[in-house]
Length: 442
Ligand code: 4AD
Ligand code: MG
Image 1 (spheres, rainbow, N blue to C red):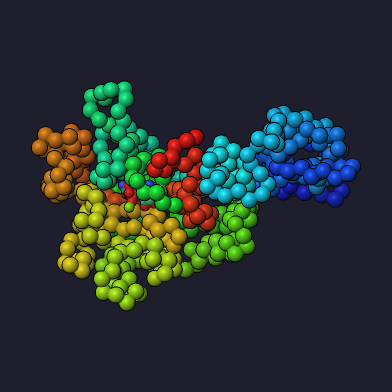
Image 2 (image 1 turned 90 degrees about the vertical axis):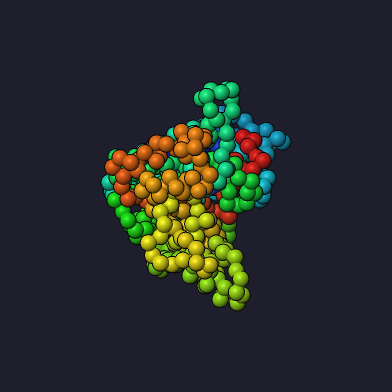
């Protein structure tokens, strides 16, 4: 590959070697007697320079696929040039000059050829490998959970409903919003599980942080009764990823495509801070007080990004949110930190980070049958009333009947993590083929 050619330079004694390279033309520069072409093959963001005669370069243009045989000596002195697939320069939409992210989103099929997007493909794959090793080392079992489900895990009503073929499953089914409920069942058999699964949300949030289809990394652990092991695991996990990225060639390439030197400095600083500075932890109630003193006002709205960005200037775990803000399955807090209004809180946390906002949500789960049933009824989930959820979540309740265990877990927005670790400003760039409200074109 071009990566191996560029990164393992020939030793002085060694004669030049004959190589064959296949890839795509990134640019051609025609001089009087000789031409230079930059060829990339996706193995690295850096192109290789091929030196060609005028005749050899005749049919080369940006975007064309080529096979070039020649002598490799820090440049490729072409001997044989073959155009595999032409790209008509009059119609090929990618150009060497700057093209806006909005424009490139109309060319999702070609966008992976842009160095920054190529880099994100490498980064995503690398992060998945590192995570897999991370969880194997800690004896977690990777599980697959269903995409088609009968229930709405988060109860937020943001599900996509499957309607065709008519009545296929007898009752409406949905695309999963989270694997959590299934991981809870699995964790009652193998106590440490994780998954990396697509999740779907029909929320009409037209923002730089929301997709309609995204990947969620979820972890569930049995036999825990505080949030501490979850929070410790998350810090360990993100630090392991950053250590692996920041010390590798991939990290250097990531910094070189993040935008400009200022942005590279900021991103490198972010990696360093994340590794070196302690991560903060605060309850929701305390967070509200910190916010009101930060803005010198009594009445404040909880503001995720302001909290992470301005108040803490780094990641912060906010714990024990008001019960009314969270889904039905969360265990009440044991700590005695009521909301400012004296309301109940639940044993949960959100990890908030600068630039991205909410990266992770997690909690302990209600493991007691009666309490869970009461909470579901309170929320109109109609369990036991013959309603729709009675059937669809009966199994979930039954887990609390037979060998119930204290347990908890979390879900991490994988594409948001990509944004955070790679300094990507819009989640629509972090995913090769993004879907968001109103858009699913390619
Ligand atoms: O906070 P959420 O909704 O939590 C759950 O679904 C839990 N059941 C997870 C669990 O405990 N197993 O989603 C988890 C994370 C969020 O923190 C966010 O990072 C990401 O998923 N997320 C999205 N990412 C991109 N686009 C969206 N529309 C997202 N919605 C949530
Ligand atoms: Mg959440």
